[in-house]
Amino acid sequence: MSNDGNKKQFWKRNAAKVPGSIQHVYGAQHPPFDPLLHANLIKAGNRPPPATPGKPKKATTFQEFESITSDAWDVGDDDDELLAMAAQNLNIDVVMETANKVIENHSKQQEKQRQDDTTELEQREEDTQEEVAEDEEEDEEDEEDRVGEGDVTSPELSFASQSSPYTDGRLVKSQSEAPIGSPKDAAGEHAALHRQRSLPHRPPLIPLVARMADQNTSGTPAMTEREASRLDKFKQLLAGPNTDLEELRKLSWSGIPRQVRPITWKLLSGYLPANAERRESVLQRKRQEYFGFIQQYYDSRNDEHHQDTYRQIHIDIPRTNPLIPLFQQASVQEIFERILFIWAIRHPASGYVQGINDLVTPFFVVYVFEYIEEEVENFDVSSLQEEALRNIEADSFWCMSKLLDGIQDNYTFAQPGIQRKVKALEELVSRIDESVHRHMQQYEVEYLQFAFRWMNNLLMRELPLRCTIRLWDTYQAEPEGFSHFHLYVCAAFLVRWRKEILEERDFQGLMILLQNLPTMHWGNEEVSVLLAEAYRLKFAFADAPNHYKR
Image (cartoon, rainbow, N blue to C red; front, side, top):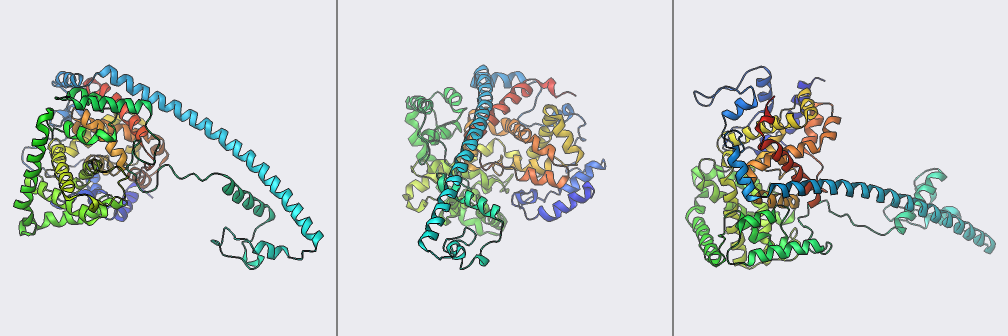
């Protein structure tokens, strides 16, 4: 089947129903984007009609494209200023050294893990063979004893008196009801069953349901000496009368301990002042201001001109992290509805757009951790005091608002910020991994068809929530982390799957892979490697605009 045929079949089956697909994440106030039509227009050399007269023509090179955009990561005359700002906030040499060490250590750990796994597997096989041989000898001795004692129990009844692994614990009355197989198969099943019984039970490191725990939560190993030392540094820095925000950013770049993450996020986002004496009064004032908005505006959700916005929010909230019980609680969904509705009517230029609902969840989880010690996935928020819940809601609203202030052009009409960033991602990938880029072109995969979601949801649909929280530690520490650095994270993320991408040989296979990347097992280590690679790309490209030239 041709690529066009594959594409039509794929979008017909999946675009309207797959959660997180392009149609799914577009806001109700925006016309749906048709990726197939967009691809065909481009392939035919046509462009959609301009929204306003005088719109510049399509750029043919990255420099032309860059010159007609005002995205946060533009290159050109402002490079020196950007580099100076980055140097002021972070010691580049230190971060580059850290990035290289992270990647080197990750490679060494992977090699050591492979060697350990091979040794353990060989040892298990030897133990199993010895145990099977011993069991066979014991069975032969038992059989001889039964014959000598006149035991006339037939092999069929003897076999039937045991529970079969194929019958879910039910007794098999005769051999005819048991699974049919050769003696060799039966011996293999016996060996497998004995191995399962003899080996210690090892629960999976990360359950299927996305866990939000990091290395400092209950049920996981105690903090290492290094982690304890980092926590002490955070506490000392936060204990002063005026927190040095530059030092806090440097310390936060490689991750923030759970115990101090709430206060650190509030400081780095600009929600709280650096002066410790002013923090309590600012918190009280901002929380009162938010609930003043609730009293003033929330009842208008049923007004005719707000009905569409509220209806879309109400539809999207249950879709937010559906595998995590915390977000399916009615009280939590009501909190999210209030946060999103108030933000939407206070930002009429964009209003509510699908995908913004995801951006509340990291803040909510982090600020819940401020009041509890146990795991949060199944935590019943109704057990919290009302004041604590109100504080969590207000703090989540203001910090989400701070984030969106820096990327609001992602959500205005036609979402121009996202379109520019996706184009920039395509240009960047063509420089850092031409094989991947040409492979996508060969099978007519448009970057907008998969990377739209990466930009719209800040990779939240691609990573477990625990990884998003760790990622945001660095985004809040990095200058323009959400608007600028995220581009390089997306590039590093795409190239991370180059082997799997190059193995796919048709449009449909590539799209299914790119919309379902296997990251459920990811944790802090994988995110640290991703961030280190992203920083290397930023260092090489953002501060060296000539690298973009063909």
